[in-house]
Image (cartoon, rainbow, N blue to C red; front, side):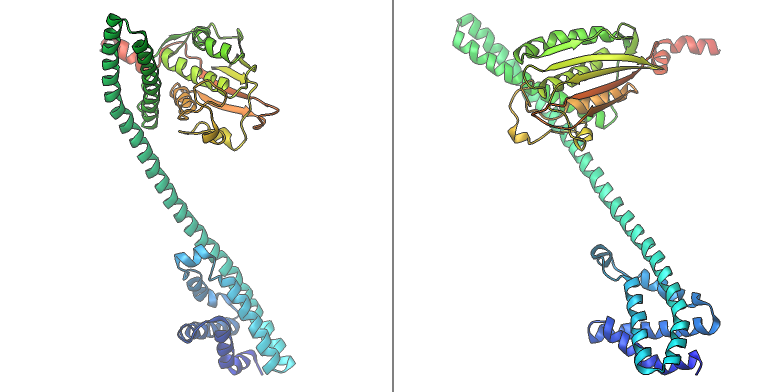
Amino acid sequence: MNVPDILNEIRLPWIRRVANSLARGAGVRENFQEQLERFFDLMVQAIETGDPAWVDPIIHDWSNAPTQSDLRDGEKNISAVLNRMLMLTFELAREDLTEQNAMELMGAVLPVFTFALEKAARYEMETHVAFISKELSGIQKKLERLDRSKSNFISVAAHELRTPLTLIEGYTSMMREISVNGQSSQLNLLIEGVNSGIWRLRSIVDDMIDVSLIDNNLLSLNFQPVWLNQILGLIRNELKDSIANRRQVLDIHTFPGCDQMLFGDPERLYQAFRNIMSNAIKYTPDGGKITVDGRMLPGFEEVTIADTGIGISAEDQETIFAKFGQLGNASLHSSGKTKFKGGGPGLGLPIAKGIVEAHKGAIWVESDGNDEKSCPGSIFHVLLPLRTEPPNEMIAKLFGAEVKSDQK
């Protein structure tokens, strides 16, 4: 008996057995049975012609049939279905056919199932990749919307807070004048406390506005001649009380290029380096040391701020440059901007990053991990381009009239 005749003999029992084994429920089984009849007929065509590609259309249809929930739950694996169909074919051949006919049948159907399994694996991979890509694209859009919402909230909240802050400052100023005239030392003490709170709140509001400007690419720089040693010296004077209170040492080296003039925004660079150095003070235990050093590289000046602090774990070394990034449990932090692990909104390093990148520079951190006992420390690297003349935009702005006249 030839193989087509053998297949014709087992057609009905094969369809019935596979349908009963793989389909659940009478309604599902009836629909699946129609699919099995189509597969069986194509398999016969493949064996008669010697071309297993006859089964390609139905494998393609089956591989693209899973719904989104099936793909998400990992169900409807066509490769597993085909393997089960092959095993059931072996069982049926052993039970209903002679040994010789069973061998002939399996020798004929095996290449067809091998082809079908290879195609199913490829189609399933393509389908899953397309599904995952679509899911990731949707997640990316949601994250972008969330980030825009956060940026919008920061911008609106910061600007809305500025108005009542200005009013409070005005009334506090009037109260101070009244208290001076009335010579009330107790009232003066209360007013100073209010002023301290106002200053802290205004600092947070200003940071929120800066983050909003950076997020929306609206941070403008006022390029002027800058000397890094002067900026670092000013920061040393500002932080000396905090350093003294924490019994720390701030060592600013004289490094190559620190006294070289370059063009940048002095106020913004001051803000960036102050934020980084304040962060070093905050996460370095009392009695620790902060060292500022640097070197010249081709086209760049590199400044390093190293501390003997608690360090930063590998997974947090990117997070700290994100808005509201915090190390450890924020609820366990102390209050104050320079106290050990002092709390804060988590905007200092993101602002520093935005300012450095606006100068076409780069910032990153190195640390061997986070450990409050061994204190492995951290090293922040700031890379700034060595601009020895203003950017082209500034030249055009300053000398636009002369350039135009030359062109005439």
